[in-house]
Image (cartoon, rainbow, N blue to C red; front, side, top):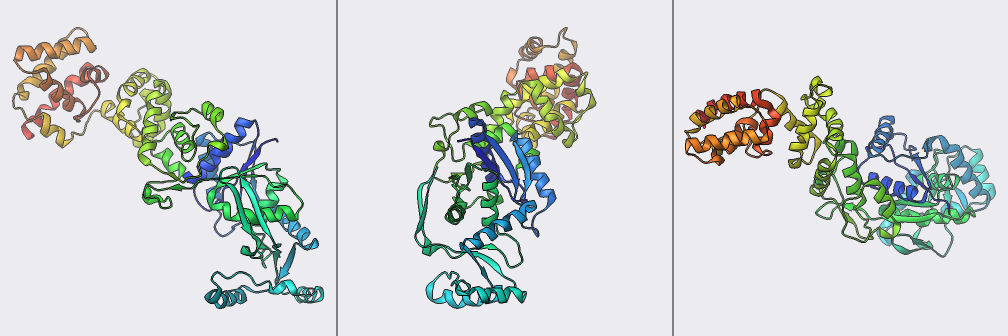
Length: 478
């Protein structure tokens, strides 16, 4: 079987993690099989769909690196085809016209639900004669088209959840075309999947309830249905439906928060899928090689924002420094810490800085902000760091002495700066740790930073000396 899958988002909102994971699973299945991924925009909800959302979805997919082979195809451009399928079902007796108005249906639903539980359509219009239908049509009375659900059970073998069955009497005669002439989702999705020769439908488990109805349509049209694979839902840490209060956000919001696309893809792949090992780090090639529907779990996945940050940190740490500089540049521009010199003269300095400071960071925005600490002239002192490491009055004498010593050493490298500090500490009769900790605060404003001698070399002689001398005022304030 030639694998043809589709990702079919609705442009009524942003692409969030659930939809992004569905897109990823479809992409992985297509790429592994050498198949085709179709991007179909299901924009038939005219009131809620927006072109801006469509553009946002496409931008998010492109940022994640999930390319497609056909599309984007707009479902709204295929409504005539959907209506033609409904007409074909009318002709074969698998569908019928329903003249019940929404107000009538609401009244009967209110009356019926109090005695029998959930009310289902009572098939009132199914018994209309051909002449009665023709008369109503001739008078211009609005009519919906309903599918005639046959007796008996309908079942299918889901590639994830196994055998699923539904009794026909549990399904009401569902609407294919509304009385306004608008085809419904159920009709449109089946017509489109058939015309596009979709072989596998990979989607969220919340769509399982739709599947028996769609299978009935395939059966009525005399067509073989695709393989269905419903992937587990993504829940928040409290096991409720994932929402913004759990830290979930739109895909592009993760981009803007400094998440790398590789990290998000790796993280999403492991939400409900495993290759059967304890392995956690997968690049795209290894994901494609390892992915299978058989590895998708039936259990709901739990979104863990801290785990996403961990993945992001791993990828930040593993990128070559030159590539990391490319990735962080637009974030630096947005944060106002970019300088034109980073493009040419000081490119190597920027890459050296990033390679040195990145082990502490799990997002590009935090990394970009830290670059400002080293690149700018002014620094912000953490009050807690000042109180902890500037509390020895003798530093008012020691820091100027260190500044002078560093200003006059022949070479300004790791070995020379360390030797200068430790030699001075010995001459002053104090601990080297006192000077190291105070220098860290003086040079970065923080109590935690890379190795102090790495910091000195990155800042350079002039800025190191200048910051040491400027920090002396802080000692009297601590």
